[in-house]
Amino acid sequence: MRQPLKHLHELFEPDLRSEAFARLEGASLRRKTVADHHREIEAVRMSDRVPETIRGEFETVRNLYLYSWFVYEFTVPAILYAHALIEKTIKEKCVRCSVPLDGVRGLRNLLELAVSEGWLINADFRHAREEMSLAVEPWYSPWLRSRPRYLPDGTDFCERLAESLPKIRNMGAHGEAGLGFPASALHLIEICASIANALFRDSPDAVPPEAGRAG
Image (cartoon, rainbow, N blue to C red; front, side, top):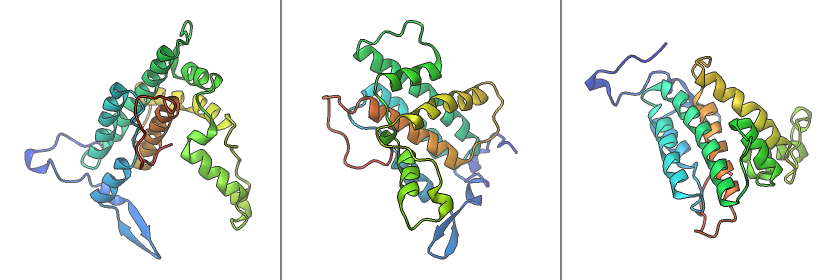
């Protein structure tokens, strides 16, 4: 089901699919609200050390995700814009570090370059850290403990991103992707922020924000 152009009086009515999700609070479920949706994306931030031009475009990504509450399909352009911004961020890092881009084209090659330059490691990504903690904490079930470990100073999680992100981007760019779940879109936006925060963590330009979910 695709959302047709809304009538003027419907502009601020939520997409029915947005309200189909639930939140678990204690032992009970409640319907997800626009406040929940806003809180999720507001918490995903880029450090002030990331160049202002990158941070400015990231606000477009965040707004696309935010307004997907009213038009569910906005999750797709949010994902595509996030992927494009990852490419731009890595290229900007290369320019600032005088790393040549001769022959380096496409998202996968750029991500692989960022890993080979030592700019990205597993510890830069929240989800890699979460999976690692699930693997080592003794009170979890054996199934959870058997999940792959991502050592903080390793790059295997980053290498998986270099392989998977271009495939996801290409599916959307070539019209092969269906509608993404908001949680999946949020995860990819977090990855975008985490990459930028990692690439510019040593920048002396500014102090990173005290709060921020990503990275």
